[in-house]
Length: 219
Image 1 (cartoon, rainbow, N blue to C red):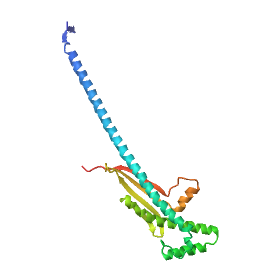
Image 2 (cartoon, helix red, strand yellow):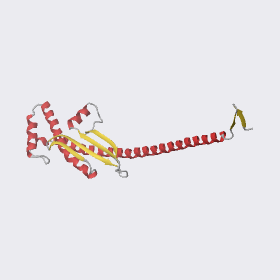
Image 3 (cartoon, helix red, strand yellow):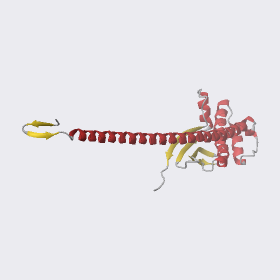
Image 4 (cartoon, one colour):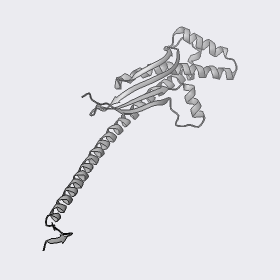
């Protein structure tokens, strides 16, 4: 019944079915194991990606808050620079914020610029100088809320050619997540030129760095 004759040899096939079933079970178990392992790996990766996005979106929000605060301080500097000429301070002999020699130079330069075009150019250049002067002062208040902020001034007190603000924001609950921001403060004339060209969203700064990074703890 379970025996058949082949080429003169007798072959017993009673165990073949059992072996095949065992092999199939091993294959199925292996496939199932790898499927479960892949699903677990995908779940872990998905969870890690979700956490990564959540933490960095939080830092993005904090970064926008920092930029808004910097812009508010620069707006104050712009107001003070514009107010200088709006109040007629350029014709005074002294000014509360400026040394006598600087105030004297502005007064004499303003009076020497006879025609309207020359005077407008002088006023714009002076406002640039005053804006950077006041911006350096107002940006010192960054440390009140952002003690890690670094303000680098390119030039001297009344000959400032640029200001750079740097900060690295750290997630309070996950300190390995970081966001580094670099802002370049634009001159008042650059800002006004952008606005005159129709760019109503012109800013008093330019974002030159917005880098998200994750630190890895030492083993």
